[in-house]
Image (cartoon, one colour):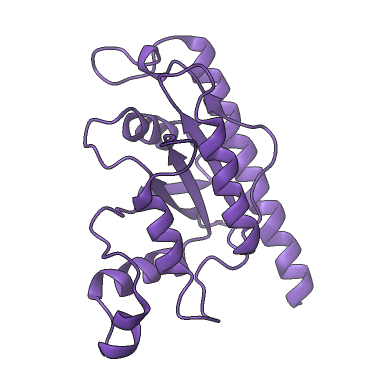
Length: 196
């Protein structure tokens, strides 16, 4: 029996094309097990959430509709984010808000997720990682608790070609992605049992 790979939407908190977190997201995609198919969903172009645009414009902004559609059909979401001022970047928070509306039609509900945060600093985006988890709890997103991934000194993780430098970090992230695949399957199996 052929099993279709899980579709995973990858959201990158940093908007810079050459950002460390975008490089990290690309590496995580390459390290994922064959049971997953990952694709970056861009968030930088999303208009800031404003309920007036939902109510006054019919239909709402096309960027919102497209984004909501991408997340809705995904089996899971991987968040890769830096830390800005002990929290998540505005673009990532905006994506959460856009996906959570209109009220009662959130595309995040019961969507399994994992978070990887990284920073050139020593604590690896710990504040952003946990601030994001706080929002995901409210959005009813079952987020993988272990293993955690806070990657400090992220500017030292990559070679001149943007690839991971060193077997240790390669194995760590490969193990993280396998654990994430297991987590997604656990949540999906649980939901199938409840529905069936």
